Image 1 (tube, rainbow, N blue to C red):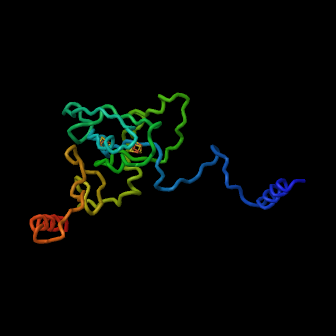
Image 2 (image 1 turned 90 degrees about the vertical axis):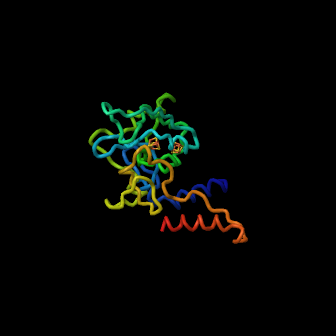
Image 3 (image 1 turned 180 degrees about the horizontal axis):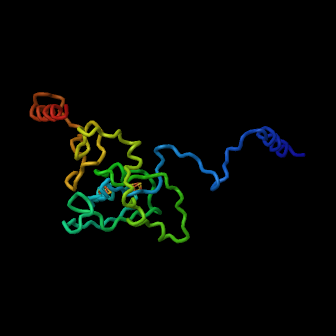
Length: 213
Ligand code: SF4
Ligand code: SF4
């Protein structure tokens, strides 16, 4: 008997009494980590209006160019979201998506989150482009999805229309105007070493610190 066969049998004998590390999927399923990022869900507010205001920030943040949106104006006869616009078309190409979660992070209204949906096989590639109708929560079943894990829920009196320095944004009061980073500083000040040459800039930066205090 060759040495390799003996080595293989030794490995088998060593593991024979151990609990298997595999499971019998699909009868059994693993419990996923709370921050697991699977297929996207588009959320509604409790009054059934859609959270998405068609701002394209998620599409702009997507490194895989996986999101396609066509926005349309809300009208009084057809109000779909609380903002000026809503997404008439919202497609996510799950063949391009790398499930990085940047779209979720970029969304100012908490409209898109990546959830625990990972059963994403299909026979045809075109079926992997998910449309708004497949992504949107049903009426009367609004949630904030995995944002419950990522964001500490803001107390009522602290709810803000845009992301704030304190990071207690829950998206509940956003509108089409509430895009961008709110009052979160988005660049490091570049200051000269000689303070006298840089007095105005330093005064300006100190003023911004005071605003955020
Ligand atoms: S998870 Fe990442 S790759 Fe996928 S759609 Fe969102 S931003 Fe794009
Ligand atoms: S960033 Fe949010 S609100 Fe803006 S288009 Fe994307 S999902 Fe809609």
